[in-house]
Amino acid sequence: MTVVGPFGLSVRDQALEADVQAGLAAVESGLLDATKSGVPFITEAAQHLVRAGGKRFRPLLAMLAAQFGDPDAPGVVPAAVVVELTHLATLYHDDVMDEADVRRGVPSANSRWDNSVAVLTGDFLFARASHILADLGPEAVRIQAEAFERLVTGQILETAGPGDGRDPVEHYLEVMQGKTGSLIAVACRFGAMMAGADESAVDILTQYGERLGVAFQLADDVLDIASDSHESGKTPGTDLREGIPTLPVLHLRAQAEADGKPEDLELVELLDGDLSDDARHAEALRRLRAHPALEQARRDTVRYAEEARATLAPLPEGYAKAALRELCDAVVHRAG
Image 1 (cartoon, rainbow, N blue to C red):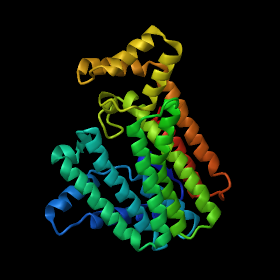
Image 2: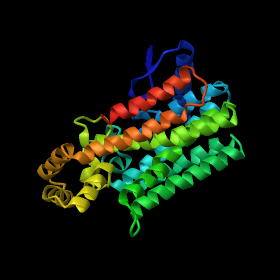
Image 3: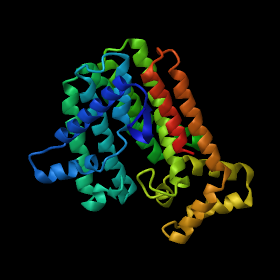
Image 4: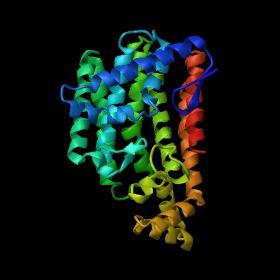
């Protein structure tokens, strides 16, 4: 049993382990090649987050999905590189929008340089992803374009907020399906499709990826509140301090509005105040960690992970399917 990929995923078959490790190594090489430029400064900025590491969650899923066809097919690795480049590009843009200082344990691009450099570097990565994608055929281009539209739509919906009469929690889950679920679904879809898996397997793995992607993001929401370390690659309470709505906070607000408990209303008032003050920020974290809203967010995470696991049922049994199941467990474990 060997540990590979994010969260210490255990691969119990030597052949599968070799395929996954070789695939991830090829993706890493492909990422470095794709982020090189004739302008040294662009190379430095474009490789900033590549070299910072990361879970490579999306490439891992592409490698595992490819096991349901020919994992050595020539399009598998380039497709995984496309998905990871797209993900990295969104991180550059997200950090500008969120005014983040740290990403993956290193200074964010916008704090190391400035917002303009970060935005343009993200655009550069999108361009490089498109260049690789063009060689994968028009169907791949269409799939990526649809996913990217959903991703951007999710981001816009998050910025706009829920409309009048819309449940903020339902709105948030819809946002997560677009912002995070869409690209993780494409990682699974590309891996299976490029490997020549049959259409039903491609569809199943796409649905699995979307549900797992939402669970993955919800686990990050829980970690932002519950973690005492840098497990998520960000300082705990970063989203809280920046006023970014996450699922535990949305559940708290819903409970406060429904029940009107003084302690809940007081905590909402604290969250609506100035959390740049370290003492107020620490108090908000302490109280949220003890609030039932955090456990409710954990239950939502488990629900999406279990839905992802159930989606896999029609696929043939084997080590790849077992690894995909284990990823569901790993996501839930992250959320505690």
